[in-house]
Amino acid sequence: VERAEQVAQIKLLMSRLDAGMNVDAGGFRRNPTNVYADPDLAEREWQTFFRGHPHLVGLSGDLPEPGSFLTCEYLPTPVLATRDDDGRFRAFVNACRHRGVVVEERDRGEARRFTCPFHRWTYDTEGTLVGLPNPEHFGNPDPSCLGLIELPAVEDAGLLWVHPDPDGAIDLDEQLGHDLRAELASWHLDELSYLGRDDYDVACNWKLAMDTFGETYHFPALHSQTLNLGFHGNVQCYDTHGRNHRMLLCKRDIDGLRDLPEDDWEITTAALPVYWLFPNVQLMPFAEGLHLVRAYPDPRDPGRHVSRITWYLRPEA
Image (cartoon, rainbow, N blue to C red; front, side, top):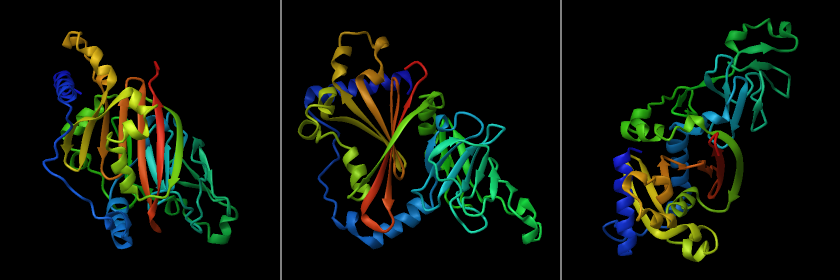
Protein backbone atom coordinates (compact mmCIF):
# COMPACT_ATOMS: atom_id res chain seq x y z
CA VAL A 1 0.00 0.00 0.00
CA GLU A 2 1.36 3.43 -0.93
CA ARG A 3 2.60 5.48 2.02
CA ALA A 4 0.13 8.33 1.54
CA GLU A 5 -2.73 5.83 1.29
CA GLN A 6 -1.62 4.14 4.52
CA VAL A 7 -1.65 7.42 6.43
CA ALA A 8 -5.02 8.44 4.97
CA GLN A 9 -6.61 5.10 5.90
CA ILE A 10 -5.19 5.20 9.44
CA LYS A 11 -6.59 8.72 9.92
CA LEU A 12 -9.97 7.54 8.64
CA LEU A 13 -9.97 4.63 11.08
CA MET A 14 -9.05 6.97 13.94
CA SER A 15 -11.88 9.34 13.04
CA ARG A 16 -14.42 6.52 12.90
CA LEU A 17 -13.16 5.10 16.17
CA ASP A 18 -13.44 8.50 17.86
CA ALA A 19 -16.93 9.07 16.41
CA GLY A 20 -18.12 5.58 17.33
CA MET A 21 -19.19 4.86 13.76
CA ASN A 22 -18.55 2.30 11.03
CA VAL A 23 -18.78 2.30 7.25
CA ASP A 24 -22.10 3.83 6.18
CA ALA A 25 -23.82 1.59 3.65
CA GLY A 26 -26.42 4.26 2.95
CA GLY A 27 -29.35 2.27 4.23
CA PHE A 28 -30.56 -1.05 5.60
CA ARG A 29 -30.62 -4.25 3.61
CA ARG A 30 -32.06 -7.70 4.21
CA ASN A 31 -30.82 -10.77 2.35
CA PRO A 32 -33.60 -13.25 1.54
CA THR A 33 -32.89 -16.67 3.02
CA ASN A 34 -33.18 -18.40 -0.35
CA VAL A 35 -29.86 -16.76 -1.31
CA TYR A 36 -28.26 -19.29 1.04
CA ALA A 37 -30.57 -22.27 0.51
CA ASP A 38 -31.89 -22.39 -3.07
CA PRO A 39 -30.40 -25.46 -4.86
CA ASP A 40 -31.03 -23.94 -8.31
CA LEU A 41 -29.12 -20.80 -7.36
CA ALA A 42 -26.35 -22.93 -5.86
CA GLU A 43 -26.02 -24.83 -9.14
CA ARG A 44 -25.79 -21.58 -11.13
CA GLU A 45 -23.11 -20.33 -8.75
CA TRP A 46 -21.17 -23.59 -9.11
CA GLN A 47 -21.21 -23.40 -12.90
CA THR A 48 -20.62 -19.64 -13.23
CA PHE A 49 -18.42 -18.66 -10.29
CA PHE A 50 -16.46 -21.88 -9.85
CA ARG A 51 -16.39 -23.80 -13.12
CA GLY A 52 -16.26 -20.67 -15.28
CA HIS A 53 -13.84 -18.51 -13.29
CA PRO A 54 -10.10 -18.53 -12.40
CA HIS A 55 -9.27 -19.51 -8.83
CA LEU A 56 -6.46 -18.92 -6.38
CA VAL A 57 -5.01 -22.35 -5.54
CA GLY A 58 -2.15 -21.09 -3.38
CA LEU A 59 0.91 -18.90 -3.09
CA SER A 60 4.33 -19.25 -4.66
CA GLY A 61 5.54 -20.50 -1.28
CA ASP A 62 3.35 -23.58 -1.72
CA LEU A 63 5.67 -24.62 -4.56
CA PRO A 64 9.05 -23.50 -3.22
CA GLU A 65 11.30 -25.63 -5.44
CA PRO A 66 11.22 -27.46 -8.77
CA GLY A 67 9.54 -30.79 -8.15
CA SER A 68 7.14 -29.47 -5.51
CA PHE A 69 3.41 -29.94 -6.00
CA LEU A 70 0.02 -29.28 -4.44
CA THR A 71 -3.51 -30.47 -5.16
CA CYS A 72 -6.98 -28.98 -4.79
CA GLU A 73 -10.00 -31.27 -4.76
CA TYR A 74 -12.72 -28.70 -4.04
CA LEU A 75 -13.01 -27.09 -7.48
CA PRO A 76 -15.21 -28.51 -10.27
CA THR A 77 -12.03 -29.92 -11.80
CA PRO A 78 -9.52 -31.67 -9.48
CA VAL A 79 -6.24 -29.77 -9.79
CA LEU A 80 -2.63 -30.97 -9.65
CA ALA A 81 -0.27 -27.97 -9.56
CA THR A 82 3.48 -28.43 -10.04
CA ARG A 83 6.69 -26.50 -10.37
CA ASP A 84 8.55 -28.11 -13.24
CA ASP A 85 12.30 -28.55 -13.62
CA ASP A 86 12.59 -25.08 -15.18
CA GLY A 87 10.79 -23.49 -12.22
CA ARG A 88 7.59 -22.86 -14.16
CA PHE A 89 4.22 -23.10 -12.40
CA ARG A 90 1.90 -25.54 -14.15
CA ALA A 91 -1.53 -27.00 -13.46
CA PHE A 92 -3.27 -30.13 -14.71
CA VAL A 93 -6.48 -32.06 -14.33
CA ASN A 94 -5.60 -34.49 -11.55
CA ALA A 95 -6.95 -37.50 -13.45
CA CYS A 96 -5.16 -40.26 -15.33
CA ARG A 97 -5.72 -40.25 -19.08
CA HIS A 98 -6.39 -44.01 -18.99
CA ARG A 99 -9.39 -44.47 -16.67
CA GLY A 100 -9.70 -41.04 -15.03
CA VAL A 101 -8.46 -42.11 -11.59
CA VAL A 102 -6.95 -39.41 -9.35
CA VAL A 103 -3.20 -39.51 -10.00
CA GLU A 104 -1.89 -37.68 -6.91
CA GLU A 105 -3.84 -38.17 -3.69
CA ARG A 106 -1.53 -36.23 -1.35
CA ASP A 107 -2.31 -32.57 -0.72
CA ARG A 108 1.29 -31.39 -1.23
CA GLY A 109 4.88 -32.57 -1.32
CA GLU A 110 7.83 -33.13 -3.63
CA ALA A 111 7.84 -35.50 -6.60
CA ARG A 112 9.34 -35.67 -10.07
CA ARG A 113 6.94 -38.45 -11.06
CA PHE A 114 3.20 -38.93 -10.49
CA THR A 115 1.93 -42.50 -10.81
CA CYS A 116 -1.71 -43.51 -11.11
CA PRO A 117 -2.47 -46.14 -8.43
CA PHE A 118 -4.81 -48.08 -10.75
CA HIS A 119 -2.53 -49.17 -13.62
CA ARG A 120 0.70 -47.27 -12.87
CA TRP A 121 0.61 -44.83 -15.76
CA THR A 122 3.28 -42.30 -14.81
CA TYR A 123 3.62 -38.58 -15.58
CA ASP A 124 6.33 -35.96 -14.97
CA THR A 125 6.07 -32.40 -13.64
CA GLU A 126 5.23 -31.15 -17.15
CA GLY A 127 2.30 -33.58 -17.36
CA THR A 128 4.02 -35.75 -19.96
CA LEU A 129 3.29 -39.48 -19.94
CA VAL A 130 6.69 -41.03 -19.24
CA GLY A 131 5.78 -44.64 -18.53
CA LEU A 132 3.05 -47.26 -18.62
CA PRO A 133 3.09 -51.05 -18.22
CA ASN A 134 2.94 -53.05 -21.45
CA PRO A 135 2.69 -50.17 -23.91
CA GLU A 136 2.59 -52.70 -26.76
CA HIS A 137 -0.88 -53.73 -25.56
CA PHE A 138 -2.03 -50.23 -26.50
CA GLY A 139 -0.31 -50.18 -29.88
CA ASN A 140 2.73 -48.33 -28.48
CA PRO A 141 0.86 -45.01 -28.17
CA ASP A 142 2.52 -41.64 -28.69
CA PRO A 143 3.14 -40.33 -25.12
CA SER A 144 2.75 -36.74 -26.30
CA CYS A 145 -0.92 -37.46 -27.00
CA LEU A 146 -1.68 -38.94 -23.58
CA GLY A 147 -0.25 -36.44 -21.11
CA LEU A 148 -2.26 -34.97 -18.27
CA ILE A 149 -4.74 -32.35 -19.48
CA GLU A 150 -3.16 -28.97 -18.83
CA LEU A 151 -5.14 -26.13 -17.26
CA PRO A 152 -4.55 -22.39 -17.72
CA ALA A 153 -2.18 -21.28 -14.94
CA VAL A 154 -0.63 -17.93 -14.05
CA GLU A 155 1.83 -17.03 -11.29
CA ASP A 156 1.60 -13.33 -10.48
CA ALA A 157 3.11 -11.41 -7.54
CA GLY A 158 3.28 -14.57 -5.45
CA LEU A 159 -0.28 -15.72 -6.24
CA LEU A 160 -1.04 -18.98 -8.09
CA TRP A 161 -4.10 -18.78 -10.34
CA VAL A 162 -5.72 -21.72 -12.16
CA HIS A 163 -8.76 -21.91 -14.41
CA PRO A 164 -10.63 -25.22 -13.93
CA ASP A 165 -11.70 -25.23 -17.59
CA PRO A 166 -8.91 -26.30 -20.01
CA ASP A 167 -10.36 -23.83 -22.53
CA GLY A 168 -10.71 -21.02 -19.99
CA ALA A 169 -8.66 -17.83 -19.86
CA ILE A 170 -6.99 -15.90 -17.03
CA ASP A 171 -6.94 -12.11 -17.39
CA LEU A 172 -5.84 -10.65 -14.07
CA ASP A 173 -6.18 -7.05 -15.24
CA GLU A 174 -9.84 -7.79 -15.93
CA GLN A 175 -10.31 -9.90 -12.81
CA LEU A 176 -8.48 -7.73 -10.27
CA GLY A 177 -7.83 -4.42 -12.00
CA HIS A 178 -4.48 -2.67 -12.34
CA ASP A 179 -4.65 -0.83 -9.00
CA LEU A 180 -5.51 -3.89 -6.93
CA ARG A 181 -2.86 -5.98 -8.68
CA ALA A 182 -0.27 -3.33 -7.83
CA GLU A 183 -1.44 -3.14 -4.22
CA LEU A 184 -1.28 -6.91 -3.79
CA ALA A 185 2.21 -6.92 -5.32
CA SER A 186 3.33 -4.35 -2.73
CA TRP A 187 2.91 -6.98 -0.01
CA HIS A 188 5.70 -9.12 -1.57
CA LEU A 189 3.68 -12.30 -1.18
CA ASP A 190 6.27 -14.20 -3.22
CA GLU A 191 8.57 -14.06 -0.17
CA LEU A 192 6.21 -16.04 2.08
CA SER A 193 6.69 -19.66 3.11
CA TYR A 194 3.95 -22.18 3.75
CA LEU A 195 3.33 -22.85 7.46
CA GLY A 196 0.19 -24.98 7.75
CA ARG A 197 -3.41 -25.57 6.73
CA ASP A 198 -6.75 -26.62 8.19
CA ASP A 199 -9.96 -27.62 6.40
CA TYR A 200 -13.34 -27.19 8.10
CA ASP A 201 -16.40 -28.97 6.71
CA VAL A 202 -19.21 -26.75 7.99
CA ALA A 203 -23.00 -27.04 7.85
CA CYS A 204 -23.61 -23.61 6.33
CA ASN A 205 -23.71 -22.03 2.89
CA TRP A 206 -20.37 -20.77 1.59
CA LYS A 207 -21.68 -17.21 1.19
CA LEU A 208 -22.86 -17.14 4.80
CA ALA A 209 -19.32 -18.00 5.87
CA MET A 210 -17.90 -15.23 3.66
CA ASP A 211 -20.47 -12.76 4.99
CA THR A 212 -19.64 -13.63 8.60
CA PHE A 213 -15.91 -13.29 8.00
CA GLY A 214 -16.66 -9.82 6.62
CA GLU A 215 -17.86 -8.10 9.77
CA THR A 216 -16.49 -7.43 13.24
CA TYR A 217 -19.85 -6.57 14.79
CA HIS A 218 -19.84 -10.00 16.45
CA PHE A 219 -16.37 -9.67 18.03
CA PRO A 220 -17.46 -8.32 21.46
CA ALA A 221 -20.08 -11.06 21.91
CA LEU A 222 -18.59 -14.12 20.21
CA HIS A 223 -14.86 -13.44 20.59
CA SER A 224 -14.78 -11.45 23.83
CA GLN A 225 -11.63 -13.19 25.13
CA THR A 226 -9.81 -13.60 21.80
CA LEU A 227 -10.20 -11.35 18.75
CA ASN A 228 -11.99 -8.62 20.70
CA LEU A 229 -8.87 -8.15 22.82
CA GLY A 230 -6.90 -7.15 19.72
CA PHE A 231 -9.53 -5.36 17.62
CA HIS A 232 -12.10 -2.62 18.00
CA GLY A 233 -15.34 -4.32 16.99
CA ASN A 234 -17.46 -2.73 14.27
CA VAL A 235 -14.87 -0.14 13.15
CA GLN A 236 -13.65 -0.58 9.57
CA CYS A 237 -12.67 1.06 6.31
CA TYR A 238 -14.02 -0.31 3.03
CA ASP A 239 -13.08 0.13 -0.64
CA THR A 240 -14.19 -1.67 -3.79
CA HIS A 241 -12.13 -2.80 -6.79
CA GLY A 242 -14.69 -4.08 -9.28
CA ARG A 243 -15.98 -7.39 -7.91
CA ASN A 244 -13.25 -7.37 -5.27
CA HIS A 245 -12.97 -5.26 -2.16
CA ARG A 246 -10.68 -4.39 0.72
CA MET A 247 -11.55 -3.91 4.36
CA LEU A 248 -9.33 -2.62 7.13
CA LEU A 249 -10.16 -4.02 10.57
CA CYS A 250 -9.22 -1.56 13.31
CA LYS A 251 -6.64 -2.88 15.80
CA ARG A 252 -6.52 -1.66 19.38
CA ASP A 253 -2.83 -0.88 18.78
CA ILE A 254 -3.94 2.05 16.63
CA ASP A 255 -4.14 4.19 19.77
CA GLY A 256 -0.38 3.88 20.23
CA LEU A 257 0.17 5.72 16.93
CA ARG A 258 -1.51 8.93 18.04
CA ASP A 259 1.61 10.20 19.79
CA LEU A 260 3.99 9.17 16.99
CA PRO A 261 4.92 11.20 13.90
CA GLU A 262 3.06 10.08 10.78
CA ASP A 263 6.33 8.92 9.23
CA ASP A 264 6.38 6.16 11.86
CA TRP A 265 2.84 4.95 11.23
CA GLU A 266 2.48 1.44 9.82
CA ILE A 267 -0.77 0.08 8.45
CA THR A 268 -0.09 -3.35 9.96
CA THR A 269 0.10 -1.75 13.42
CA ALA A 270 -3.20 0.08 13.01
CA ALA A 271 -5.23 -2.45 11.06
CA LEU A 272 -5.59 -5.90 9.55
CA PRO A 273 -6.20 -5.54 5.80
CA VAL A 274 -8.67 -8.08 4.41
CA TYR A 275 -8.77 -8.46 0.62
CA TRP A 276 -11.86 -10.19 -0.75
CA LEU A 277 -11.01 -11.64 -4.15
CA PHE A 278 -14.03 -12.76 -6.13
CA PRO A 279 -15.59 -15.20 -5.67
CA ASN A 280 -14.39 -17.04 -2.56
CA VAL A 281 -11.02 -15.75 -1.30
CA GLN A 282 -9.92 -13.64 1.65
CA LEU A 283 -6.28 -12.56 1.90
CA MET A 284 -5.19 -11.10 5.25
CA PRO A 285 -1.58 -9.85 5.19
CA PHE A 286 0.11 -8.87 8.44
CA ALA A 287 3.65 -7.93 9.43
CA GLU A 288 4.81 -11.52 9.97
CA GLY A 289 2.96 -13.25 7.15
CA LEU A 290 -0.45 -13.96 5.66
CA HIS A 291 -3.72 -15.66 6.55
CA LEU A 292 -5.55 -17.10 3.50
CA VAL A 293 -9.20 -18.19 3.66
CA ARG A 294 -11.08 -19.90 0.83
CA ALA A 295 -14.71 -21.06 0.99
CA TYR A 296 -15.71 -23.93 -1.31
CA PRO A 297 -19.39 -24.85 -1.72
CA ASP A 298 -20.58 -28.44 -1.62
CA PRO A 299 -22.08 -28.86 -5.11
CA ARG A 300 -24.54 -31.44 -3.76
CA ASP A 301 -25.82 -29.42 -0.78
CA PRO A 302 -26.18 -25.62 -0.60
CA GLY A 303 -26.22 -25.96 3.19
CA ARG A 304 -22.61 -27.16 3.39
CA HIS A 305 -19.19 -25.85 2.46
CA VAL A 306 -15.50 -26.33 3.26
CA SER A 307 -13.45 -23.45 4.65
CA ARG A 308 -9.78 -23.96 3.82
CA ILE A 309 -7.55 -21.80 6.03
CA THR A 310 -3.83 -21.56 5.27
CA TRP A 311 -1.02 -19.70 7.04
CA TYR A 312 2.22 -18.32 5.60
CA LEU A 313 5.21 -16.65 7.25
CA ARG A 314 7.88 -14.21 6.15
CA PRO A 315 11.51 -15.38 6.33
CA GLU A 316 12.30 -13.08 9.25
CA ALA A 317 9.24 -14.11 11.31
